[in-house]
Length: 309
Image (cartoon, rainbow, N blue to C red; front, side, top):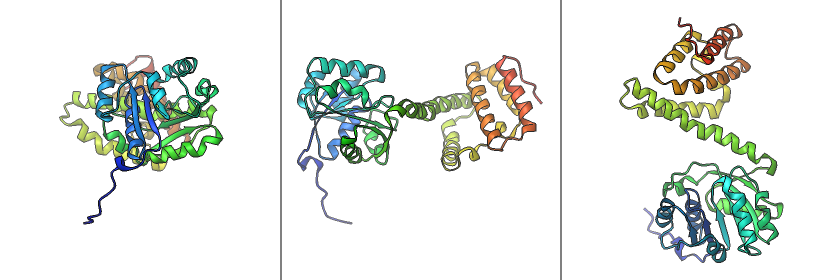
């Protein structure tokens, strides 16, 4: 075992002072990660009691101040507020003179590129859009999860190196996204990650209703294998009754869901139709079986009981 003592990040000379406007789940984690890289968090703002507690836990000894004071103290400011609040925040900071020339202004919205920061750019700020493609818990585990995490990056060409350096310092991998492609990029991530949580939560509820005592242990290996196969093989990883064209089984599913969990029927039918389309296009679902299957799905949409075979 090595006896060489690793340097404490606190002993490194700080290169940038860091501020956070919006102490949600993302901002404190990114600031804590930048602190590990030698930067120095100096101010954070938060409105709710939960955000204040989170900031105190993730960034101890960093003062809670107003957004204007964060801007006054920090060389690098993380704007980690909800998407819909971001344009108004940027305009307000610029109009009140809070933005300083040469100040790095980073937002973490997946929806927006660098253009949303134009009011601050006109005030002399250096605009960066750095969106971590990761789900956040608001705890210290988020800092660890940033290792190897992809960041959707959009910035002016002259700030490309600065954007890449910040992402790499946080342990991430920069992935450049064109300004006009940010909404599509964000929709793709929401489709994969946000909807996955809904699907898994529904599956857990249904398994409990079916009498499974440990649905998480049952689903864990299955979903892990499905995700791995999908990432490796795409549509070739499709399995199950829809991909096989088992119309009778799908009809039973629809009937049971309508009886026990009617709130899940629309989602099941929508995903089944999307799965059938992809299975047909990839050659997994035989056309002669697809007709009966699509008929069952159409009946399910109409609210009729499927033809159970």
